[in-house]
Length: 65
Image 1 (spheres, rainbow, N blue to C red):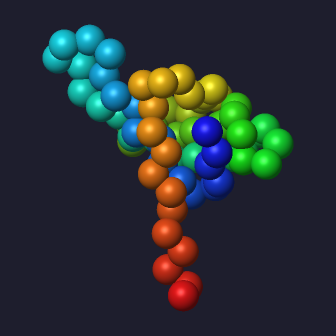
Image 2: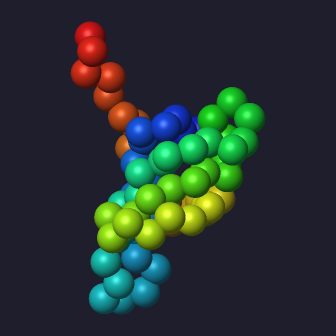
């Protein structure tokens, strides 16, 4: 898994009734875009993540082009 600052991580709920969560990558701590990542969730909570198989990277599109 590789991500850059500004990408979003979509974390799928792992149990019935648990909603998916979205977190924005605010810092990449691994080499060449690899985990761990410092992320900020929609509610403002920040944490370090090493995403597992229940997570998908949604790459940030550069709008400058």
